[in-house]
Length: 175
Image (cartoon, rainbow, N blue to C red; front, side, top):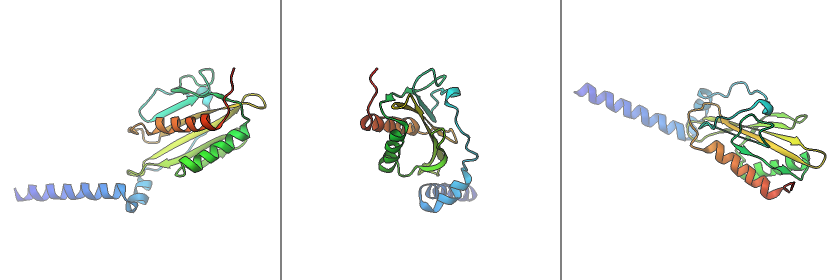
């Protein structure tokens, strides 16, 4: 009986230490090493499909671009550079924790890393700005967890907040 009490006590202590490390700065480096991101590949949005999984969210201009998507993005009456400036301003205001990890200025595709507070689980967010003529453009956004164990809706809410910001600060193209 005494050994069982000791084992239960050790298990509880181990669980407490694990949780404390998971939510405090002390555990940041060990958990970042444990949950590494791995290689980051460019996204081909024309071949992207989302299954509305619990750990991903895909927003595209339409089904002609993405095979299957979770949300549609509008066409803005703004050029690519204007959208990129607004995007960068939005990141500074709403998402300063996002870290740029891959940039391709030729295709206007940018990938960002965000680590969740709990256990430093990594999420990746890729955005690409697509020109639509000289004065119009649209964006495609794919937010996903590297370890798809559920994200409690953080990927979908992140993309929705981003699109709301862009819709508020850019001119929508009226067809």
